[in-house]
Every structure is written in C-alpha cells, then in structure tokens.
Length: 269
Length: 269
Image (cartoon, rainbow over all chains, first blue to last red; front, side, top):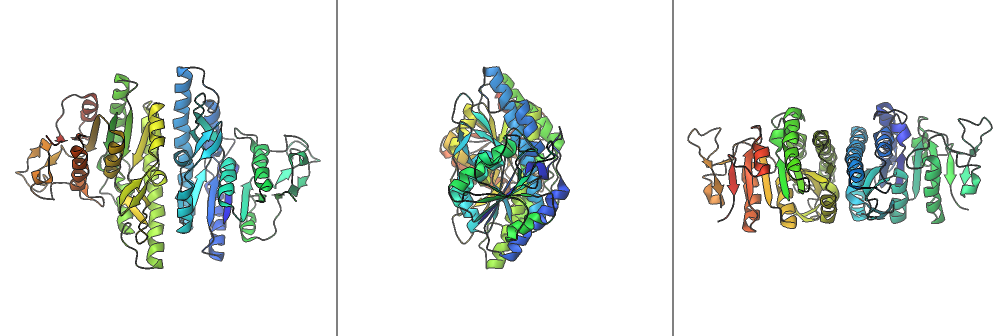
C-alpha cells in the first residue's frame, strides 16, 4: 500500500487570494500516478491532497480552530466552516476529475464526514470504509478539510492533509508514504532566504533542522515544520516517508515506482 | 426539525444528456429556504437533493447496482461508480454554494462516506455526525449518490435522495418532510399523457394510484412511484410528508412556514 500526498502548493496557486487550481500540474501528476497502477494493478493506493488556496485563506479569515468568544463569534466561524468545507470539496472534485481522466478509479472520502477531532487531532474515523474501497481496487482520495471537534469551546477545526496521512498511516501501515511538495525536500534553513541552505537527505529528529524556518511555505496547518512533526511520529512507528518536489516532472512517478529520487527521507535509524 | 428535498428535476435539467445545473431555480429556492431560518433561527433543517442529470445518466450507462458478471464488468461498473460519485458531488457543491450565498450554514455530508447498503437499502450510517451538525445550527446537505453495498455480488449501488429521506426521517423523527418536485403533486394517472388525470390531495396507499405510471419522471431510482413507496413507509410510522411543485415560486417557502399549499400529503389516517 502506498499513501501519496499532493501538496496544496502543487495543485493550487497557494499564494493566491482566490482559490485557483493548477490544472496542468494536476493532470501531469495524475498521469504519473497512473504508472504505479500500470506497474501493478493490485497496488493499493490512497491519495491525500492539501487544500492550498481553496482552504487556507478561508480558515485564516474565519479563524477556524480557535476558541469562540460568544454566539456571534461562533456564528461567524460556522459560516467560515461552511465556506471552507465547500471550497475544499470543490478542489477535491478537480483532483478526482483528473485522476478519473487517467483511468484511476478515484473515490472521494470527505474528511468532515468520516473524522472527528479532539483538540485539533483526529480521534475517530470510518477507517473500515477506506479499507473496503481499497479491497475493491478503488483509490480513496482525502484532503485537508474542516471537521468537528469534541472540545465544546472550539467545535470547528482545520485538519491538514499531513495529519490525515499520519492518521491513515498509523491505521493502515503502508509500505510507502510519499509527499509531493514544491521544494526539493527539507533544508536546514529556508532556501528562499538563505543562500547557504543545504538539502537534508534524511531527517531523524527536529534537531536536524537549524530553525523552524526550514520551510518555504508556512501555512495555517504548519507548513514544512508541521509536516515533519507528523512524519517523525510515523518514523517512530517504523513507517518511513519521502518528501519530493512534485513540480519536477517524473519525480513523483519515480518515487512511486521505487526508483531513486532527489528528496528527503524521514526515518529514524 | 424539517427534512426538505430538492428534486433533481428542479435543480438540474434532468432530461439533458450532460450534467446541467439549473442555477436560477437553485438560488430562488435557497432564498425561499432561508425564510424558515429567518422565522426561527433555531429550527433544525436538513436538505436532501436529487442527482438529476448529474447522476442518473452515469448510473444508467454503467448499470450500477446490478450483479456484476465478471472482473471486466466489475471494473467497468467501478469506473462508473467513480464518475457518478464525483459528478453528484459537483452538483452538491453548487447546491451548497447557493445555500451559503443566502446565509444558510450548509454543510455537505457525503452519502458515500457515511452510508452502507445491503441489497440497495441503507443499513448503516454515521447519524451521530448529522445530529451534531444540527445541534450546532449547521444545515446538513445530503444527496442521491452511489454507495457501497455489503452484497458481494453487487458491491456498488445507487441510493436515491428519497431513500435517504426515508432513512433520516426514521432516525430523526422530523416534524415536517417536504419534497419539492416538478409537478403539483401525485396524480391518479400520468398528467402529461392523460387529460383526465386528477391531482390526489392525500395518498394513504399505493392503491390510491390508478397505475404505476402516475408520474412524469421515471428515473433510475423509481420516479414518483418510488418516491411514494418511500413516503408511505414513513406514513406508517406516523411521519407525514408533503409533495409540492418547487417550480412554482413561493410554494416551498409556504410549505416550510406551514402555510397551506397545493400539493399531495402522504399520510395514513
């Protein structure tokens, strides 16, 4: 089983104020993903995608995930919850369209319909549904979304695609976890502001990063630093993951097929 | 609590080969639905919509819900399952967009993510999620979709919005069930082919219909006859429902507010 992430920064214009889908990248990646099913039609595959500009702007604007002050504040956040949920779903429709176009039997699994959180962490899910889809050769497609939280002071929270990957990998123990981002991997410093930054080929601890600024995209769900925290939790369980630059054609394909690729492995020796 | 149906023949061009949304009707109805929340902001409301031309054509083409003959046939149906699921979700995004535009805190609940069927009938769901949404004042929006079936000879089935209404009404015992269709109600004969057809103001049994042809829209999920069968099951439990013509401006609003409207009541005295 492979769990694969399509970063929001790849499939959307993440810096845009409006939700803009990067259809070109999406179709290229769908074609690359197809190669793993051509190689082995019985391979179980799960796709998780970020929300990019279809989620982060709204989640920020409506301050979803913070304790609500009063009924008015709750109603405001609730409106943002509706809007964000519908917009991430819209992006998911584009992703499924692209996968289906390349004959991948994609089936959306709406995170808000299967997950429940407690203090912003997933505590409950309908994992059996995902297992059944996989057994039938369907490719479940999940995504960064807003979901309910049992903490009555918050109620409405954002969950990142990375947290979903962490959750699914713990439950399903995939052979491979591959994360397609818009950078070559993890750097010791932010490569966009530090000329002497170096790509780290293996991360085994947060101490491998010189600063929390080792990222090019800080977002509402924590950017690269948040991502690595999720992946280190998996590495502690013996589930290794690989961060690659999905903007480079064929890197996703090579990673999926097990060919050597530039990137960062998150693994504890 | 009110459970409200927006028929696929109202919000889509149901006769179209391609999926075409009727945005005008959708917005008008969203505005009418808003009136119930203006009248009572604490009213619990669930919206269920049909799939119309976003579902039936694909479900028919790929013959979803019939026993599959062999692996090739299953793979063909599985492709149709993916396509139908993504297309109904697309329509749901438009419906939620319209509701949100009119300040209704709509939250999609993907049927394929919460329901499981056995021989084409829903046997399992995540009803707690819907209850939690209602408690928070959110308006769950469900729709006719494809879902998994535990019968291993079928696996993939279609469920109508009407079946969802039947299921939800049994579980949640709403005060009102209102179905917006494209006809004034139930006729003793098909009004489009029989000049002497008469509107039936109350249906208490299938015997009240002169023929199974008492409908203008036979579809993959059974058209008006299928609808009445679902509603009679509810009537037996004491849950009455009302079929109205949602093409007529303000009829939905009047029905929601409890004003007298032309239509058919499904009720057992």
